[in-house]
Image (cartoon, rainbow, N blue to C red; front, top):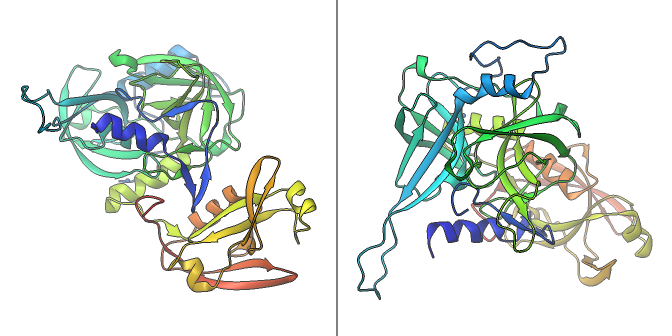
Length: 394
């Protein structure tokens, strides 16, 4: 299997919520927008060409482009071709993937998607001044599809972009994507934020990426890793995936960006340690809704129903119990009879998304109190969290 094929297979694989499956039906989520397919993060305004700013801080699309484009780069990653022992033909040419990225500081750190550089033997970064430099990988995180590169360049040749607060964006807000679709350098497309709630995409290693930003700004192959910018010219997301209708080969106006608040945390860890460690509980489960609670007389009408517990996991060691009875409600399968998680570390948990958010606030090895309903009883279980593996199957 080629690198591009392997990346596509990983990106399209079933997502695991701590062991549970999440999928978006009716479309194929392509993780290969790049071809066939953290240092301290800056939050100050990007030092680029001056452009007039409106009284409320909002910029026009042309002003956003003038400020941000010098900090957007094209990334070319090259991997050696796979040998084919059964072929007598000459060895195939090396595989290349094209993607985008952006400068985040004056020391040469660049953010892009993991899937743009996955398996690369050589990475080159092309700047707006036509310079092309070799880059090294500082660290990568397949679980969020984020990677940090570094180039050796004078600070004068670098135009860092500033991160904004992705929690502040709202549906309908203007956004601009800048990248290199199909190798067309520093192309701008504009649109709006289409959705910010309950959007989850699948990372290259199969884990879910929560709270992604949906936009109708046109994103195509080669845009991967480029910035999604707010009306203030700040990076509020990293363009990562698109939805494609059956038979479609291009954008249908549904793109997804990893939110900047997620990216900032990942980048900070990658530039400090080269890796990201995440706490792991070890359960598969589903969100309890009012219908499920009513039909099966569950003790609460919101929380996370524990359907399975991984052997040897933190949850298993703490004695959490999974379900034993298979049922189908409104076309969805559930396993009843297990514990119901309603709080982690004193924070209420009403859904699988909220459970992941609560666990993300803790580190591997930390002990946390998890409140559960077990039958008619309310109990508190102490759990020493494990470390998330490189893939849901690991």
